[in-house]
Length: 600
Image (cartoon, rainbow, N blue to C red; front, side, top):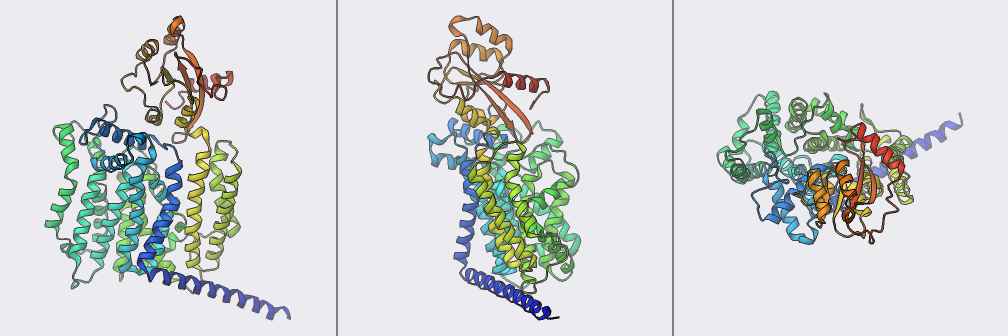
């Protein structure tokens, strides 16, 4: 019995400490948001700290961003700003705006950086950063400054938001007009009928729709349309759409998006001529068509897993929106935003979930932020939460950083281990705050945890794994070598061509053999048949010599890559021949990969 008072004191002390911490978080948020410019600056710094390490340190990640960058580089080199081509291939589903944005960045950087993938990533990173600021600025009048700031932070550090900021593709740029259009529409929808000032919001909406068309076809109009369909099903009232001023607005959107159709007319004669119906729909749907045939639920799974840390409260937040839908216009709009687009993706989209679900994240972040604000101070977790037990959360964060090394059986460097421990500690603190019911502290520490995780994974861990970057490995193997004639056999990845600048006119095996015999300068990339090598071997004056062999791994397709580098010129300057020696073990693995088709 004597222990009971002590227990009560301990319990009371713990509750008192939680209340004190919650009050401190509230004061800090209130003070920060009382100065909107400072709050916006804090968000911009958060984004730069989170995004820049990966943008600057990651080599070319996938073939799509290389295709965008190489197309832009070629346009500038040819002086043909209305003729985007990848080699001789015309991609009818890639609108011109993305190439123009990347071209502007490349022009500012100068010709010395024409083959630097980081230059082409900057417009996308800037667009993602501005999307985060747009969420804060445009949502503040609707949900309040504190909720808008928390929502913007959760949106900024979500792993799939970060992923878009790292890639030189259209979807990063398209996130900005999609976010602005939807939030402007939310403001117009939630405004009182007698309120004035919606005309400027309507023009902002239509301007964003036009910009979305310029950079990514009908991606933004599709998002708006499916949301409106879902909203009309719930509302059964479309009179508020008159506030959009559709006559003037459509003209504005058409004027901004018109260059896309102009380019299509120049390249196709009749825009989209020669395309089948399915390919035409893909062209309208955006630049990232992958002909994906995903199993049901793929996009929903991507949205949930890619939305950390807010995933932990996503279910109760969405359930709360459902409960409020009858009397709360904001709840109805956010529900229609998420449900309408996820249904479209699951039924019709042929694009990867990792590039498409981010346009729902502002709505999901607002839903979670609203729940956090509603439950502030009660110290009770909402039913259905997924906040992990703190030690398990720490283990989860550590495992996320270590996963690439474990999958490739590689040993992480010491500095990555130290950073992974820091990530684990932040995951622990966030989970502990959440389990104690301090949801404001959970959100703030969770934002910090995911930011440090992104910096660690993309800025430290991934760049340290050599075998997943074939272009970087081949460049290292050629260190000090004369510029030609050198052939990279087993060439498959566009990233290598972007970095090494091979002669685009030499592709067939016999042409490669002739180029080697004639001693043409520059790199040559492609397959060289064994009989071609034997012919070269009998020519004493042009006998090919092996520079090195490189083993890499295609992360996107999950298969090994094997490259053999041959040359007919002097190899005296080659500094890495021993490091990249062509061992019998390498030849055996390469032969086995060829027999099983490898990455073909």
